[in-house]
Length: 115
Image (tube, rainbow, N blue to C red; front, side, top):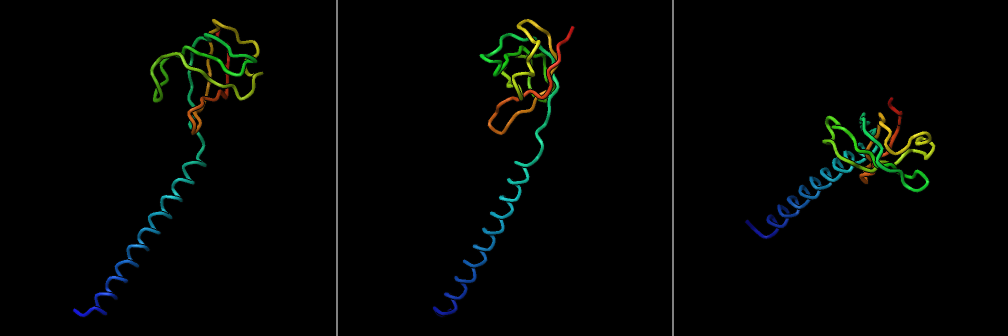
């Protein structure tokens, strides 16, 4: 095989490799953008309030098992607005809903005092 034929074959191989790489990159970019626009999964839980942060910027809750998410433990949650925690005090049993953000913050969407 002469040098000219080998050179053309090499260029054709490089072109196919570059096109395949571009197709893979496009597919990955599309799947990443779809994943980030998907609605977060909301979890439903119950627990007891252990503490409230300054200005009610967060609440520490000793929660029961959260099926499909986590075993019982104490964790911090952020309200969507501090007024969500109005009427909630340390020691209260609550039912609550939350979602987890991409940066692992847990944001409350509902808080309800239990009797």
